[in-house]
Structure formats: C-alpha cells, structure tokens
Image: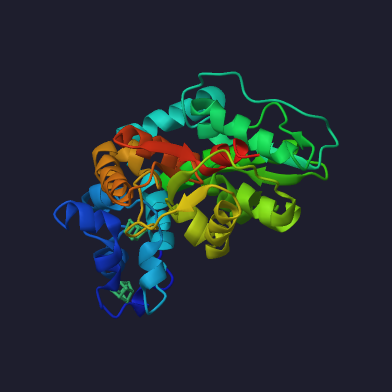
Length: 343
Ligand code: SF4
Ligand code: SF4
C-alpha cells in the first residue's frame, strides 16, 4: 500500500489525540490514536496484523481531521489501510457477520421486515431509508415519509439495498461497488434523492455520482422553513446530538438546519449539552467491530444529555439512535420522527 497522501504533513502537535473520542474514552492502551497512526502509516503495508486492533477501533468521526492544523486527513488514510487489510483477510468477526447479511439480502443488518416500497413513479422525492430505518426502526422511516408528504410526493422503489457505507468502513470495496450498481439502477428518473441517515447521504454523494440530500437539508433548502406549519403540542425540553457524519461529512450547515427547524417549533425548548458533536460510537464499523467501546462512548453521550435536564435526546441519524438507545437511561428519538409528530 502507498503511504497515505498527506500524513507526512503531521507536525506531531497532538491536537488530534486530545480530540479523539476513542482515545479520550479508552486511553492509548486500547487505541493508539490518530497521531500514532499518522506517524506509523508508512508501516501499514507490512505490519498489518499488529495494527489490526487499533485501526478498527476508530469510529470514523472525522474529529481529528477537523482539529488538525496541518489538515492531515487521517480518517481517509485509515480507510485506505482498512481496504489494504481487507485484501489480506483481516476482517473482525462482527464485520464478517455484516458482510454475510449483505450476501444474503443486500442489507448490513439481518432482515426483519419486507423492504419499504411505496409511491408513484413520478414522485418528486425518492426516499432512501437505509438499513437501520428500513429494518430496525421502521417508525423512523414512517416519520420521514409523513414529514415529506406534507410538501412532496414520495416514492421508495422496491429492491433498494444498503448504500455500501458500512462496507467502505471495513475495507470491502468489491461488495460496496456491487451495491452501488444495484441502487443506481433504481435511482433512475427525476426524483430528488432524500435520506434520513447521514452516512447514506455522504456515501451516495461521494461514491454514486448523484446528489442526495439529508432530510433536514431537503426541508430547509427545498421546502423552506416558512412552509413547515408546526403546531404546539405542548412544551418539550430537548437536546440535539450532532452526528459526526451529518456535521463533518454532510456539512456543518446541516446541523444549523436541525437547530433552525427545532427553533421554529412552538413549545420546543432546546437545551445546551457538553460537546454536542462528540461521537456516540455508532459509526465507522465500531459498533459491529468493538461493541463494548461503542457502548462506552454512548453512555458518556447519554450522561452529557441527561445532565442538561432535557426530556429527550434527538439525533438526526438512525445509526446514532440505535447505539444511544442501547445505552439506555434516557429517551432517544430520531429528529425526523420527532418532527413528524409536530405538524
Ligand atoms: S493534529 Fe495533525 S499535525 Fe497534529 S499530531 Fe495530529 S495529525 Fe499530526
Ligand atoms: S476519526 Fe475520530 S475516532 Fe478515528 S482517529 Fe479520528 S478522532 Fe479518533
């Protein structure tokens, strides 16, 4: 494998180590962290096995790249190293299970329901539910559809499969490409693609060559806040968990949109919490590869949310909802589902 393209810009300042949520939670005894991986990256190709535990403990939150004064994109380097390791059969057991699910059904999780299929061919929006809202939390997918139907016609074609983002995170480029081709055939037409999972949004934008919008982008940019007619259903105190993929790979504007939507709802009090953009542990293959570490991060997030005094923590990402619900201790709801009950 070639050396990651800009790791040699590292000035060893340590900012990424202080910002990395996995290092903060587990210390460097478990995860060497981004600086060490940057410094060691030239060894990736011939010390693959010794790096195995470290490299899959990264949650792909992109915080290290955010704070790096030299703009070293360690998550990109880590993805490349994971692809290199995948070619050497170095997948973790949880990742192998996920790939088996892909081979059976085209989904990253075990099938529990028939795939969502709705709408008319000429609908203005194609809703891509992704694996978690499509299978684990159909209530989220239903909430997205209810919300979209306020101002659009919606379709979800039968036969959509996983976007491929979880495969990219474990380094499996071959299966990832096969899924991309299957979905692209169903994307044909003039509908705007809308997702409710920021991981799907950024993966489709980066890998498919078509534009996808996260639903908060669609609501603010295409519908417009003025057209969202919310009613007062009583006072609710909420905190917003800012998902890594939404903030750092879709874009910070999408987080601003979440707050704009919440602040336009009568009766909603948005409270502050410590480090709202700290990773919950749900992404990057961490939940399937190292569920204990993912749970440690989720518990810290729930403690921060509970300390705010909020009634519920909202997360505009079904993957984050899944991980935070498993931590327990507080009501957790997908932001879009919450929105769908406030019209
Ligand atoms: S923040 Fe950037 S420059 Fe500083 S140690 Fe990390 S990778 Fe190197
Ligand atoms: S992407 Fe996140 S978890 Fe991974 S090394 Fe960077 S800060 Fe740590």
